[in-house]
Amino acid sequence: MTGEHPENPAGTDIPAHDVEITGALIRSLLAEQHPDLADLELRRVANGWDNVVYRLGDELAVRLPRRASAHQLLINEVRWLPFLAPRLPLPIPAVVRRGRPVAGYPYHWAVVPWFDGVSAASRTAAERDGYAADLGRFLRALHVPAPADAPRNPVRGVALATRASAFDQRLSAAVLPVDGPWREIFQAGLDATPYQGPPLWLHGDPHPHNLVVAPDSGPARIAAVADFGDITAGDPASDLAVSWLHFTAAGREAFRAELRHDDGTWIRARGWAVHYALLMALLPVGDPLHEVGVHALHDLRDGA
Image (cartoon, rainbow, N blue to C red):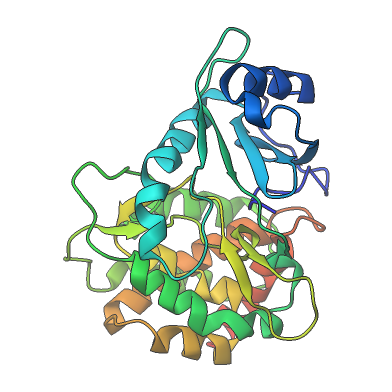
């Protein structure tokens, strides 16, 4: 598994593609640019919002942007993940081969490691508590000052106020699966002490569906942290918010114990958490992130 959404399991509309990506296209790209890989078995495994993913043999996968807006995201991963990977305590899909645009396919593409496992979104929050400390240590290692040329993301690592309009529109237009003090939680995040430190490296989107875990029952263990398409630098609160998406109160306590942030950061993170939780809970039932969002709303409502 490489962290992409499964192929539209709930009938969720995904953005239209700019280019049709087929096994035959990938074979031709590999034959031209990486001929030593061209004869490995190809199996399509994901058609995400941004990328199509094919498993390549037993140990690799090919990720190809399916639309123009995803192209720069992949370029960011190609550039920065090999730099970050040796500094992190868990595996990430650092690019092992690069692909260039050619006639018939206009974008850069990449060959990355394949990680066996399932999405952490398929496990319960109580089971996900098993990796709470590990994810905390991972983010502690990742959240260090980033260079001036690190990628910038308009919706991650920024001031929570920049998401206020989107939050209000979503809250006003939706029939929510869980009632709660959502505006108050978001407002508390807006009123919290603003971030004043240097921009830190951020994953950008470390929710449960972007973690690969073993499929066994019982406490979950992380096999890899995937999908760095939203990699950026800024306020760590937007990454920390996912602790409400992943864990129960006990897991969040273990997660938080691995990190060194003041109360203002966690209040901002809680504001981000209700923003994410509403977005996910409003996805169709059956989408891997719907239940993640509903779980987070229950915990946020109950003050857990």
